[in-house]
Length: 241
Image (cartoon, rainbow, N blue to C red):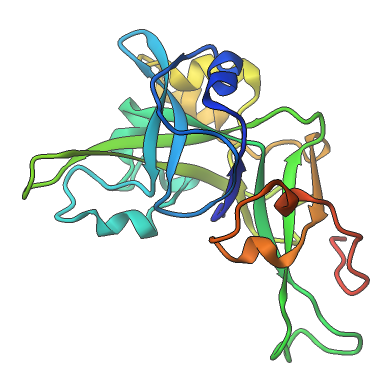
């Protein structure tokens, strides 16, 4: 699962890192990206790599309204080839969503409380990021939807998820597919073969990531500042082992 992430780098920096031409007008300093927000994503169009703007939450071309975006923020890697909402995008429209971190929540339990009596407890947010500080490259899919009432076009995207590795499994059963830099070209290749793409859909090595608790400010989508990624001491009543 990926339901909130940070995309704080400037579009110029992201374009340089991903060797793309900047098209997006979005600015950086975005520490609390939420579903249906606009995000910067890397795509390949007619042989040119571009950094463009997409709404997070894929709207399939056949949708009657754009409301489907709120529930299609993630695509399961195991069914992405067969899902009616994603199979066309998987074959033809893949993207990379850069992120410096993403967030997951785990409920903190007061001492002596069992997991069957959770009333009154507050979920503890955690941040997950690359140990080496480089941005993560989430495997994504994108689509173009035409509004039948206005003929306007909406560009939207989703993040592909996979079974969580051993580091993240205590937080959530799913995690984003994080592409190695060596896999960027293959994922964005407009002519990529399906077996090659399937081979890229795997969990990132646990040793490449770190996870740490952050403050409750990230719980509100209204909050957006660098302190959301400040590391807190590990809560005594929350264990990731």
